[in-house]
Length: 415
Image 1 (cartoon, rainbow, N blue to C red):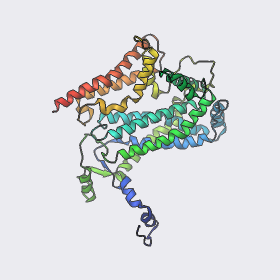
Image 2: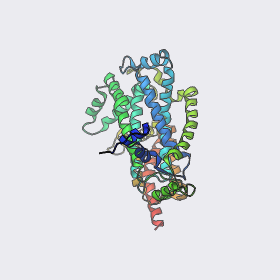
Image 3: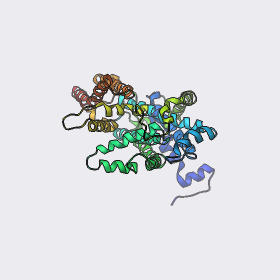
Image 4: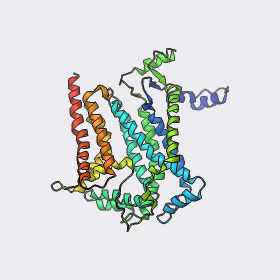
């Protein structure tokens, strides 16, 4: 039984009942971050801010959106954009945040790869982060359907049809996902439920898991140095803040993050105000029409590299159909980075510029992903098709063959 005394302040009243000070120290006041980091370590906080913006703007849009195949398009393009006061602003914030959040996710992930922040105790941080990427991808795709424009409809048609390639249950699974034989009103209702209810709940839970996994191994640093956090924290608490290699999450780390978030928000609202069109495909301003296929179907920019891998295998190989090979390759590409701790067979935790072979591999992977993204938006014909094929094969070879080989050599060389 807690010993309750007369409270000396409101804070003391709460502290005696729910241990606010202890909770604060565990979460921020005495949670230690290495000093040796830079602005790239602010991406996590920026992602949290963007998710909050998506959540708030989504709630406001939800008040006027109609999840009905006959009403959805007009509720977005007329009610929200023209009739609701400042509805256009909330839609622009939502659309730009949905696009920019993937840019920050990719930067966050590739900073982790560059500095080897996925191994030697940090595997669960990496895995929970990659789970967030996958769930955000599902959230983005389900949200892309809701305006019920031409690209929404046909993207749903293409993606749901991919499940038809699964042996034995493919046809039934496609019908179950769509809620009908074809993409129609039940499909829209199902994706609406996913977008506004189920997936946000799962995202919040996985964000909690991601933060929790940071507790034990702590954050990596610019040199990959193994820090004795308890020893360094003791130095800091004794007043030796100059020689200590750590700072508390609050106020030391977060105050710097607030500065980076402020700079980022200038960039973000510049996009919202003057360049919002990049986040909204012009074809999607035509209402969904099952009888009129767009000349060229493609997803948002952040899915283009996976889409190009889907299209990259455009010829049959033996008994395997091109469509099945592409679907398998795209499915693997979607989850491939989850297994980074398995591909990298070296114990070395250091920035890529101090790991010669890994450094070359890292930039080859980035170049390959850029090529896949650029060609993912071009028609897959002639020369473009072969570029897509070799880039798709290159992605798989870089991850499954080249990385294990160079990291095994690195491990042997360091013995």
